[in-house]
Amino acid sequence: MARTRWRGPILKEGNDRQRNKQAPLVAHGAAPVAPSLIGIRHGRGRAFVLQLQAQTALCQVAIEANTRRAADTVAASHAPAVAQLTQVG
Figure 1 (cartoon, rainbow, N blue to C red):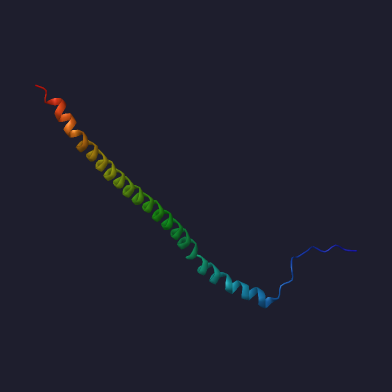
Figure 2 (cartoon, rainbow, N blue to C red; figure 1 turned 90 degrees about the vertical axis):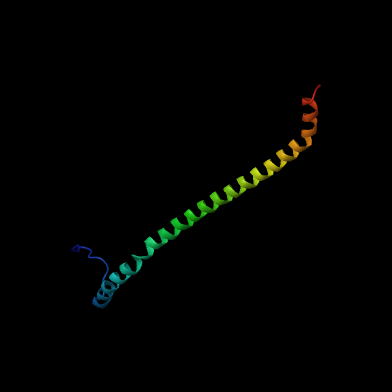
């Protein structure tokens, strides 16, 4: 029995031509999608970072306001006692 070399799957002529016509369409259709998906992902990551920075800044401002208010209250309550101690004689 003579051995024949395997030549791959048998394709009909029409299917091969049709596949070749679709290949550029797929390449042109997918080409702009990949960079746009990368850009969207990058933009969302950047937006998250900016929102986190803004939230941190607002939190720091609130902490500073609360600390100043507490310090002013303590200073006001101790002011007469400090004045009495300094007025000796």
